[in-house]
Length: 95
Length: 146
Image (cartoon, rainbow over all chains, first blue to last red; front, side, top):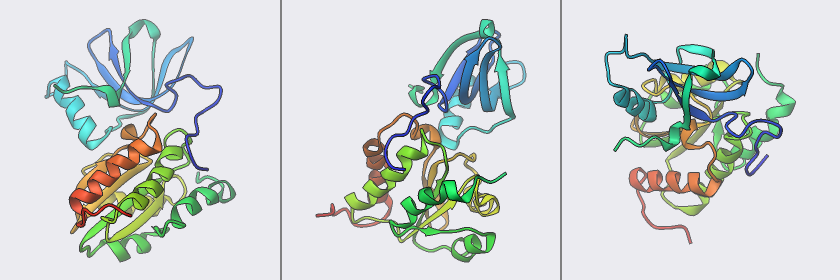
């Protein structure tokens, strides 16, 4: 049970906490499960919505980096056409 | 539903054989965390192969690499000892639940937190280096282990 154990047969980002930028301006942070014909499936997802959030997205990401992902949804499927980009949360720079 | 004990026992033992005390009930947790003094490390163990598979050996490496260790070492198992894990997390509730994760507390205050996203995709040596840095900053002696 030691060492690096990955998930054979899964996509590279499976199990990784990612930031998904939506084409509608929303930002999602959650664990990537998979991408299939339905779209990108995320688990334990926090959502930043420019229409309702009281903080800039940079602050949302900064708080998430420091305090973790405050999940609002157990899982979410984002149609691939509505996904502008996917990156690892750990690579987010706050410079 | 908790994971089968037969499956997770080796994951528990990989941590407890390091001298880390496993807290399996709410009473266990409160018994050691309700009146804290000094430094306490709480490792939230999990079955996740990609993250916990790096976190457990990282803890072993970190403890072997420095003399500046926390005064007390505890672990709870997310997805197995659900109530104990929830209670442990209540002592660092400013931080969102994630597993695996490490909380380092000093006199009951969180002074360092390693989230799951800081573990994912990294080698145990890299995770251990972060833990050692936190230990040496908050747990006293800066003398490296010989």
